Length: 169
Length: 186
Image (tube, rainbow over all chains, first blue to last red; front, top):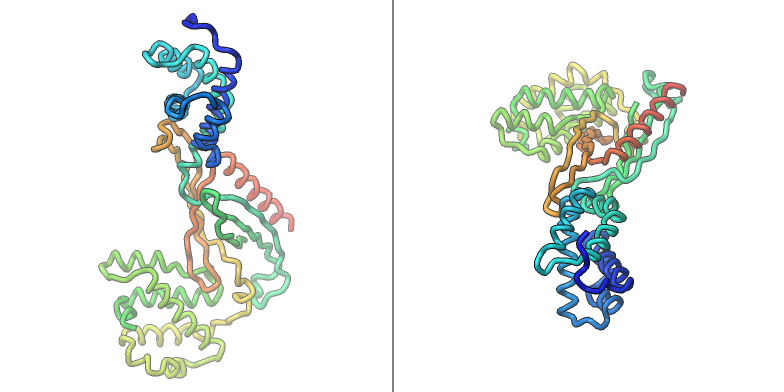
C-alpha cells in the first residue's frame, strides 16, 4: 500500500467522493436524469469552482466507466487502481479505496444496467396462464380437450408492449 | 386481381388447400410468410402483405360459400365480375378445390369466440451470449431468444420474438412445466 503523500484527507473526503460516485452512477447507469452536475456540486463540493468540479467529475466518471466496461473483478480492480495511483495526475490511495468499496457494492447492479442498455429486442415482461376444458363444441374431436391459454406481455426498454394471448393444447 | 395472376398455379393451389384445411380446423393457420418465401425463391416478385390479403379474400370467399352451401357453379357466379379479371389457372384451381372439398367444410362459431386468442403453431429457440457492446466491453450475458409462431383467428401466422435472461427463462420453463402437469390431470 502506497504511503499517502499528504495528510490523510478527513473522513468527509471519502464520504464526499462516495457521494459523487453514487451521483455519477445515478445518471450514467440508473437512468436518473435529475442528478445534474450542478446539483452534485452544490450538495457535495459547494466551495469548489465549477471547472474544478467538472474536472473531478470527469476524472471519476472516466475511471468508473473503465471499471464498469471491463466488469472488473477484484484482482483486475486492484491492479487498475494501483496503476492509477502511480500515474501523474492520478488518484490518491484513499480515493482508490473509496472507488474500490463503491465498485464492490455496486458492481452487480451497474452490470445489469449495462446489460439492459444493450437489450433492444422484446423481452418477456410478464406471463400468466390458464387451463380450460372445452366441454361443448360443434366439432366432436374437440370435446373434453384441455386447452392451455397463455398470456405473455412483451415489451422493450421500459415500454409496455402488447399482450399476446396464445392457445396451446 | 393482378397480384393473383403473379402466383403460379401450383402455389395458388397450395394456398387454397391451406385455406380449406384451416377452415376445417385441420391446421391452426395459413403460413403465408413461408409460402411467400418459396414463391419469391422461384423468382416471382410478390410480398408477404399482398399474399396475406389474397389469402384473406379467398378465406372469406370459401367460408361464405360454405355457410351458404354453394355449389361450384354458384361459387363462380358469386365471384361475379371478378371472374373476368382472374387468370384462367386461378379459376381452374378454385373450381377444382371446391369440387373436391367444398362440401366438407363446416364453418363453426368457434373462430369468433376465440377472437382475442391466437393459436400456437411453432416455437424456435436459441441460446446466445452477448459478449460486448458499445456501452460495455465485457458483457458476457447469456440469454435465450424465442420465436413463437402464432395463428390469429383468420389464419394468418405471425412470428413473435423475445429474449429472456437465464433466470427469466427458468421461470418461463417452470410455468410451462406447471401447465403441462395441470393439463395431464384435467
